[in-house]
Image (cartoon, rainbow, N blue to C red):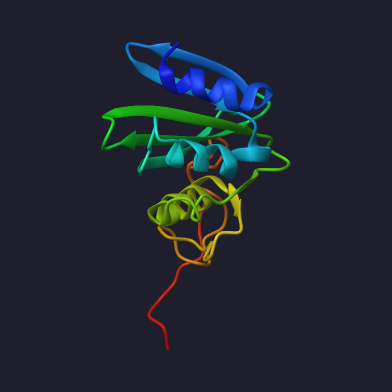
Length: 158
């Protein structure tokens, strides 16, 4: 187990559901209830200093429960290490607290996950579609989204 995972386990114990470290790539599956606190710890701990949220994405595991996963890819410029934080969300409650207060740049990543998967980021300052138009129905990266679905057409604003 890498240093990052050891520090997470020591600080959060039961909030860390599972971890693995393959080829120097640390990954932790955490519970959503304390995600902002966990991310803030990763950013602020002097031995970790994850100052760069490289990416956030959603994953749809259609047929599994919990169905959705939010994945944070974090990097420390000073320490030159990275970690992947994962949170699973149930289909009937795909809600997680926004991390915009931790890294302001994660704003658009959260909007993309909302737009494409329907994952709601509680407390987000502007949780609106970012890739699809406002009248678009559904979330196109969900595995059960009908690829032949007809959408309402939009024209120039009048």
